[in-house]
Amino acid sequence: MDRSTLIEAVGRRTAGGGELSADQIGRVVDALFGTVAEAGAIAETLRAGGAVTLVGFGSFHQEDGEAALRPGKALNEFVNDEVGRAG
Image (cartoon, rainbow, N blue to C red; front, top):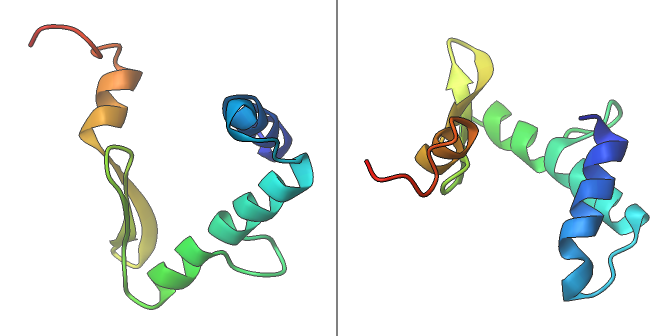
């Protein structure tokens, strides 16, 4: 999924909560993840030595000087098709 496809998908998911334009969604994506010209909030936090945790999704952090994502339990369960299954 590239940036444009992500913006379209977010637009479809948020359509029931009020219309967000593709431009508005694009600005949010850029603010989070950044652009070539300007770092986003996640990159700035990592550079400052912090971490960004999105409960269920995972956490962005530094590992050995590299940016990394540690997936959350809910994300792993969804990706592995374990959602709703008895454990």
